[in-house]
Length: 330
Image (cartoon, rainbow, N blue to C red):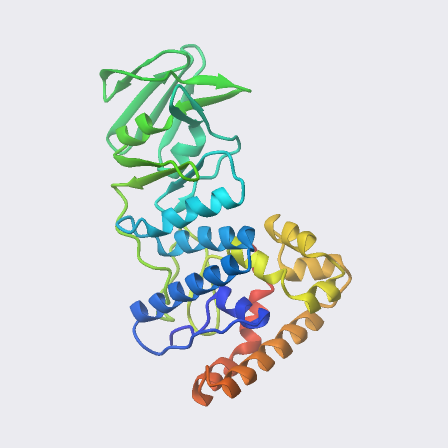
């Protein structure tokens, strides 16, 4: 059986939004999910809530990235500007490049920590202290770069660099475009918002994060959680943490501010963990969220946004879905 509610849609239900319910093919379900994201982002923009809109935009890109469609990247750039994000934002196949140090521009070239780009492109890295060089290997391709030298070996052949790798605060930074392109990735630059877009040519076209059949096992390399509808999700998204923090009754029960709850979720804690730390019975949290969700479903039936059959399908497993939700981390 297919899942009816995504994590973000469940939170939207609790926060007063309208979940979509479908029993059609996965592609139609995914398209509706994407539309839900876009509708909520547009609503947030109208209200001037740019920070939350940015988080949801990043989550939308991660789950529904299409390298042929640059409209979402354009909107990301505008949101970065609205949020006064002055640094460089790097996306690899729609996913935010995670780095323990901030990329920077030197002589017109974006420099990133070696571990960040190698992890993003699934490459192996070996540091040679004696030569102050790094060997990056991916499949049959290999690149050797040297700190403070504008030269490299690409599959054994000499190559020149426009900007030499350098060491800053004990981290080796590499020219992003050169390394990415040598590892068979396409690199583009969007000036608005200072966004670097990397599309890995070795990555198959991304399927939307849509329902799986109930008996399909999750990929071994990406542990996932499944709820009673049979859909596996990797966990709460960054935007979902913000949506949780809009629930005033939940905040009051936990004795936290919105910022405090967001910080706890971003630190990897689950709602169940947070409740335990605040000496709140997690069953009371579940009962609160269940009551809120049931009220929203009833309101949406009354407003004509849901049919009785659709509402019944939601109610049937609502408690188990909420129980699953409070155990999820980012």
